[in-house]
Structure formats: C-alpha cells, structure tokens
Amino acid sequence: EHMHHGFYEPDARVSGSESDHRAAQIRMIEESLRFAAVPEDVEKRPKKVVDVGCGIGGSSRYLAKKYEAQCQGITLSPVQAQRANSLAAAQGLAEKAVFQVGDALNQPFPDGEFDLVWSMESGEHMPDKAKFVSELARVAAPGGTMIIVTWCHRDLESSEDSLSKWEKDHLDKICRAFYLPEWCSTSDYVKLLQSLNLQDIRTADWSENVAPFWPAVIRSALTWKGFTSILRTGLKTIRGALVMPLMIER
Ligand code: SAH
Image 1 (tube, rainbow, N blue to C red):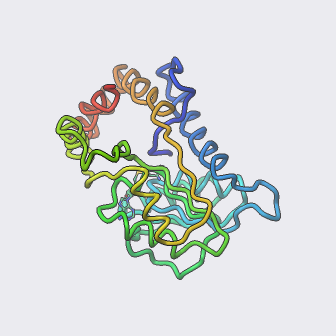
Image 2 (cartoon, rainbow, N blue to C red; image 1 turned 180 degrees about the vertical axis):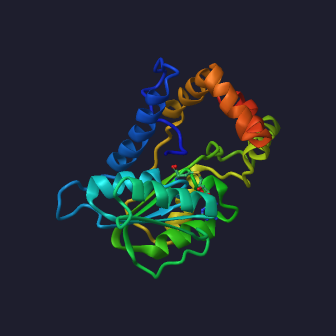
Image 3 (tube, rainbow, N blue to C red; image 1 turned 90 degrees about the vertical axis):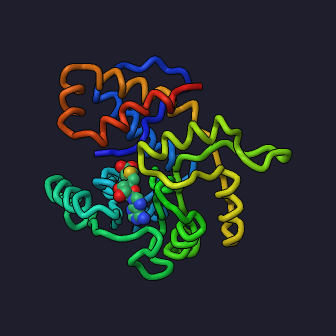
C-alpha cells in the first residue's frame, strides 16, 4: 500500500520479510506525524487532509482511520487513483479517503482547505520546487500543518556553489532510473518555505533512518518470489532495482 521508505533505528539489522518493510513504512508515517507534533486529541486532530502525490493511497487510508479525517489524494497516475479508490472501498473507507488525478503543481482545490497537508516522498518528482511548495501552502488552512518528507541532497557549504562532479554523476544515475528531475537540499526547501512566511519550520535529516530499507528490500527481491515478481513488472522496474544498490553506497 505504501510507496515510500521504511523508518528504522540507525544501523538496525533488518530482516528481509515483507511484513517488516510494511511495519517500517508505517513507522515512517508515525515518525513524520510525531516530528510535526500533529495533535492526537479529538478536538485538535486533523479533520481535512490532502495527500499530495498519493500513490495508491496508503497514507490517506492510514490517516483517515487514525484521525477519522476526510482525506483527499491526488496523483498524476489514473491507474494509481483507481487502485487507491478501490482499496479504500474494500476497507470501508470509500467516503473518508477519496482519490483523483490531479497535478501537485496546480492543485484542484480552493485556498485554505486542509488542516493537514501531507506530501510523502513525492517532492522529489516535482520539477518546480517553488511552485510545489507554494501550492502546498496555498491549500493549507490558517494554523494548519504541512509535512514534506522528500529526497534531498546534502546542504552545500558556504564555500561551495554546487555538489562535486562525483555527487552529480551519482544523482544523475538515480534520476535516470527513477525518472526524477533535479534535486535540491533541505536548506533550499527552508528558503522557499521562509519566502512564503510560514511559521515554525522544522527540518531533520533521516538518511540514517532510511538507509536500512534498501538492503532489506533487495534481500527480499533476491528470493525466488521477489525475483519473479520483478521480472513480471518489466524492464523499467528492473532498471530501478539495479540502481537501488547505488543509493546505499556511502
Ligand atoms: N505518497 C505515496 C506515493 C509516493 S510515490 C506513498 O507514500 O505511498 C510518488 C507519487 O507522486 C506518485 O503517486 C506519483 O504519481 C506522484 N506524483 C509525481 N508527480 C506528481 C505531480 N506533479 N502531481 C501529483 N502527483 C505527482
């Protein structure tokens, strides 16, 4: 259901079992909510959530259940939106978690609509980070919370004006395999958020917490079941799978 990294204690020894990956992916959702201090009590907890770049809607269904919130997800993929809606219906959440095709850079929602704006590992797909962030802020209600969990490159030193050649080549390989546009750093995001006058901006680097995820996924891909299912999904997935080990090079 989830198309994002798992969250682990740094250097955790992780088994290759699928239920472990799934538990770690749910931990990623919980850690994100905890980091952003999203209130749990009935009065203050989120009531309207937008899930920007929703995949097949795992986060929305989780948040709809956890907070009894009304969740709306957007994705560029009609296949994902359809699958997300049918999973919601199968889980009795057809009214609470609703999905549609929509562009994060031009969201199909009015201003100030949502008290929780959620973007889980979709920012790295956005070719225009400024537009992405301004759309997230536009649909957020006054006093609402925005959570952006995304792939970033390291912050640059004041003496640098770009990443090293080696780092750029390394990122290019990942971008080609996952069809990603250019990356930015956490501090680039902070500058964008500050330019929109948002308050209480907090960041964290969770590289160490997500690092155990790829080795665990690769171990399960190396089982016969994993291997045949990768073959079934076709060449594009195989290319992504071959690049995964790059992401865990230190
Ligand atoms: N948040 C989901 C999916 C992450 S995968 C999860 O955690 O499971 C990235 C998602 O971003 C995919 O659903 C992809 O369709 C979506 N996406 C990429 N660019 C987008 C855009 N411009 N507008 C809306 N969704 C986008």
